[in-house]
Length: 376
Image 1 (cartoon, helix red, strand yellow):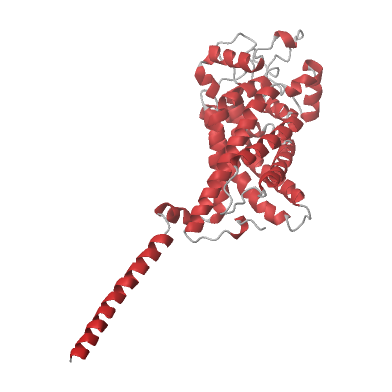
Image 2 (cartoon, rainbow, N blue to C red):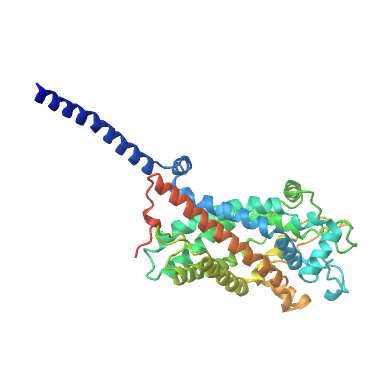
């Protein structure tokens, strides 16, 4: 009995200890593999929406940062397009209102106060959301599509950037026309002959007045040079992909768990690609702004109907060269560089960082992203 009692005691001790060991192991496994509540929430987002979402957030971030410089650039680009067509004595140097970055900023603050530097912010933000959402979504998808038709990656990247740019530009042109009208608007306190032919209180007022007095065509002013501006993204994004790959070994949107995001290399790639693209394609922005800021079929102060000053891109180029010289095609270039380069760096940094974090959280929750894994 003593032996039986000893065996029973040993058996009982062993039996009681086993569930304890099992419970401890199970608890440890559950703790290490359980995703966070935020990761579970992010996991519900379809992977196809990651790029549009990150793109729209990135665009809004850059819009807040660079709005004052965008206002200054737009005013420099647009000046010279509001003079009276009937005026025989036109002296470009005598009608210049805005001179340089600092001079233009001082004029805006003097006429409209600090809020003048943020005129057009609302349509800018409303425009950036769909613009970058469409662009990043189409670009990422198009890269995979064109990869089957081109042998070289840069060719697929260029075709994808043009496709994405055409889609986003066509979809959002009306928003950018309203933004440009608001930003180029000169204060009502300016002298006679210097004020713009319109005065809008806000974005909705601008849309209402344009629809009533000019019709739907006004919302698509400047679309032709804007589409010509696809050469800009055709340079910027393939060059960014190339430079980022040379600096980091990763393409746009790619990541590895072992390699942290190289922010310096990413920002350097953005800086160089944006500088190159802007310098090469800047004149189209001036042409687009001139077309977007001219009115169609509206009455002037003397009751006469204003005819469009510029009729087509070629005619506009000839008229600008004749009246203002070739330098007019580069009005606001310095300001635009100060605006466009930080905007691009903000956009790409926000996009790459946010996308990396969202994909990381989705992977934590078990969502597979095979296309975003870097293949070595």
